[in-house]
Image (tube, rainbow, N blue to C red):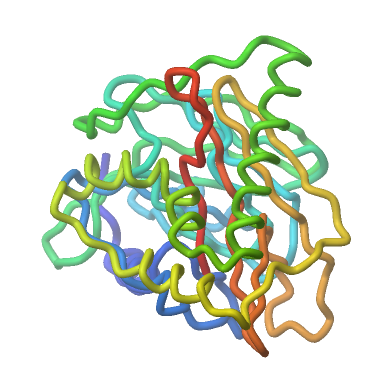
Length: 308
């Protein structure tokens, strides 16, 4: 694999500095303080670079993909048969540390209606001028297609993570996944209604408390839980009632659950960001999700959720 060109390296450095939750494109909002601080990984980071343009996709040595600030999809990023992220347009970088396993992995893009979408996986960072960034895999989803086809890759050494239980095949597995994801989301809403920040954080971080020490080290102390707990504990905070349905994407072992927001003509960004839960405190809105839920040794938990 080849090194990044100088221009691409600068672009990657700028994006990496703002963290995984930032929406890209003109007028993108600043990253909330609760989402900005992320510790350095113990293993070389692997990031998915996703865009709507083929610019840079076929060029070796260029990781950053072009992306207009327009809505598409939604497109779902699958790793080894399970959904891990929802892409709705623009240009985004998605860290993949919570999901990759040592040995063979597969990358795939899926969409019920519409692309285009292009993704490249890159290992390493551009934090220093002599850092090596190598491409691991790439996939493209043309407009009108539902699946991109799988790209196989080996990310090298990764943290040891517990195995997820396989879901029953067919409708039975999908029904089970939907049921338990909805229950976990209801548990978050209940914690927010009762202003029980401790219970809220325990539920939404159950999976992260497993993979974060493995990926970043046992002594990592993220400031995010304390900030989230303070928001939920505040009597002025309340969950927002949703008038749009919860959507589910089910894989072999995991399920993503999210609400697809309606286009907002007053928004500074034309790309709507999906979420699972909204909390409101005065004029401020806090978004959680999409949530990814898995079952480990018979117990369902939230493995990953964005907080922004």
